[in-house]
Structure formats: structure tokens, C-alpha cells
Image (cartoon, rainbow, N blue to C red; front, side, top):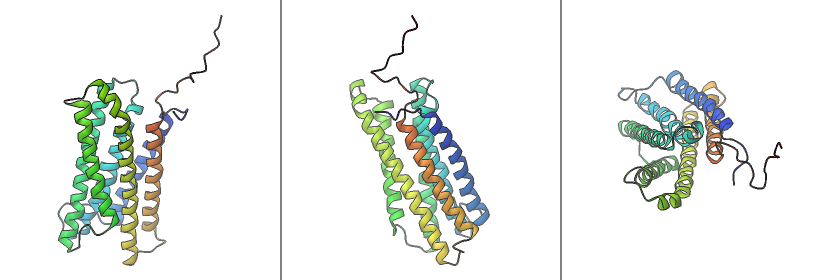
Length: 234
């Protein structure tokens, strides 16, 4: 059963929040944390790549892949399906690189890996994301299952996809919390500009994710109720 509202308004809100979140995480990494780098003597610059790629490359691009059917409802289904597949693949690559940067930072800084709930969920989420992508590719793209099988597994593909997406959002929230806690324990002002920026970025990500999920479960067009028929003019 649909929500009785079109997806379009929620996609507009989601895009506005996505731009806001992307700008805020870049300001955090570049202005407050000193910049981004894959190689640096200051190992913190390597870590800074992690939240930027995970938010912009992984979550936001993944969100665009989820919403593509609602953003482009008049396009051919095969075209939007291909865009959906490609965007998710790019998001998966960015996510993998983002995780690599976190491991690289830890290894070069002498920090233990995989000791927190954030890291456990992060690894689990990207593995599930990869499994979901492979399943979608095989079932819906190539070699492609029969129409009856595709029809039967589509609701489960959508449901599992939203589950993985919400898990990614929860992991991101834990990441913001974990990093800010570390910074505050090292002397960062709990009520300073950077702390507020990180907290508000995390809040924007929650609102963004909610908008994406509502857009995903809302119809591109509102159908007339089955029991309703327009009054004829004649």
C-alpha cells in the first residue's frame, strides 16, 4: 500500500540535503581537519578521506541509485535500471576506497583495526552491499532470470536494499559519533564550531536518509484509489 503522496517532493528535499551534507563534510575535512591526502606525513590527512568518500561517494551516490526510478519516472525502464546499476557500482568502489583509507591510517599510525562497532558494521554493510549488487546484476541484468523469477524476487531485492541502506546510515552515524568522541577526548571544545559542525552534519544525514527512504517507498505518480472513478462530464 502506497503512502498516497508522490515521491518527487521527497527527492527534491533529499537532493538539497545531499548538497548540504556534502558541503559540510568537505568543510570539516579541509577547513577543520587540515585537508585530504592518500599519502602524507600527517596521517590524519589520510583518515580525512574516509568520511568524505563514505558520505559523498558511498551514501549519497548510493542514494541517487535508489531514487533514480523516482527522479526519472518517464525514462525507459532499461535505461534507469542501467543507471541504477552503474551508480551503485561507483558507490561500492568509493566505499571500498574509503574503508581502505581508514585501514591505511590505522596501519601507518600503529592503531589496531576493527575494534569498534562502527568498524564491524562498516565491513558487514559493504559486504552486504556487494552481495546485493551481484545479485541484482545476475537476476535483473545479465544473464537475467526469467520474468516470473524476477517478479518474485523484486520485492525482496528492494526490501534487502533498503535494509542495507539504513544499515549504512546507522554506520555513518556511529562513525561521526566515534570520531567526535576521540577528538573531544583529545581536547576539542565540546561546544566549539567543529563539534557543532560534526553533529549537525550527522543530523542532516539522518534527515537525508529519511527523505530517500520515503521517496523510495512512494509512487512516482499517485494512482486513483480502486474504488474511485471520476464523475463523467456527460
